[in-house]
Amino acid sequence: MTLRYRQPGVVLTDHRFTVPLDHADPGGETVELYAREVVASDKAEQDLPWLLYLQGGPGMPAHRFVGRQAWLERALQEFRVLLLDQRGTGASTPANRQTLPLRGGPAEQADYLTHFRADSIVRDCEAIRPLLTGGAPWTVLGQSFGGFCAVAYLSTAPEGLTAALITGGLPSLHAHADDVYRAAYPRMERKVAAHYARYPQDVERVRRIAEHLLRHDVELPGGHRLTAEAFQSLGAMLGSGDGSHRLHFLLEDAFVLPTPRGLQLSDAFLEQVRQALSYASHPLYAVLHEAIYAQDDRPTAWAAERVRAEFPQFDAGRALTGGEAVLLTGETVHPWLFDCDPALRPLRETAELLAARTDWTPLYDPRRLAANEVPVAAAVYHDDLYVDTAHSLETARAIRGLRTWVTDEFEHDGVRAGGTRVLDRLLALVRDEA
Image 1 (cartoon, rainbow, N blue to C red):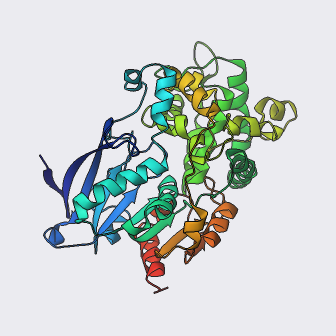
Image 2: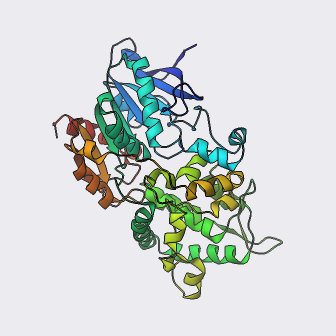
Image 3: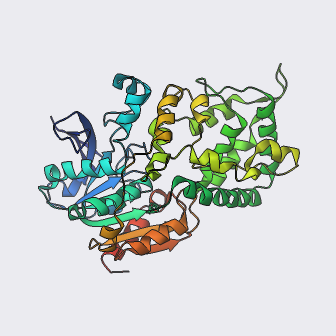
């Protein structure tokens, strides 16, 4: 039964679809997809074109908007919007420590999860599109990993698209995960330097916290182990527009004194850190993160961890000994995460098998992209923490007709922070109005 209901200014409809787990085996096992349709209240009965939104990630469900928030305000002026929970996320046959044991052991779980990358997500979209649009193509808006999916869509089924809008999500067509992280660590260092220039008092605060964690075993609420390396990964906050400010406020009240046990990290600090670091709501982000770059016969083999060794300045102990600022990290997944986070611990062997896998299929078709006829526009953020700008621009040149908007006005979350303005600019680009 289709459920229809209302929020301020919008009419919402819940949709559920059944699709093959492996689209190459349409008669085999299936998974269920959930998607929420959103339309402006005053246009609910109109025949509108569709806009499909693909969330960033991997492993993130579609955002749960209330009313006409962020970019929805602009989209609802002319589109009927579909917010898809990509397979394995949200209400779409979730894949996590609670459900994956039904598959069997780690080997069976790893085999299952090979079907949860961009190529399968695109085939899901093509399977449900005729059921919603009657066969008409739709516009796709891809944020971050959603943009990776949009490029895979252009490679696989461009006939399903009227236009593709990409925000902070143009992937390299060829780079191995090693290349991705060799570009990422210097970018991270720049972001940390900019944060310390803005908030110089945080240099000593970070040093004190890191030193405390190297000397003490600290557990977050819920059983998460807070190591110095885990603390450093809070640098991921620096990839959003207000992240530097939020990080500063988090750090300023880290310690509490006096207590019967002397100087301690405060409960308030530890709870906020738990919320920032936990993968309980999106475990596939950790499990499949490096797999989104895998498309040749080389294993990813914990690329971020291996490449980090090439940048010794990120070693907290070394920085403390040398009297240097402790650098933070972000947008990287490491094997020790699966020891620290209780939501990931049962998936450690599964992640190891995925990291060792060599039979990944290609995600993008450079020849087809070079002959592309679908209007495409991409917002490329000038020094994006999460997606390398040079890689994005190289891909932009490889996709025929793609128009870029390179901006330093927003960070990676520009489609959220900029909302209406970002979507308006991309729509103007694909329509040759800008």
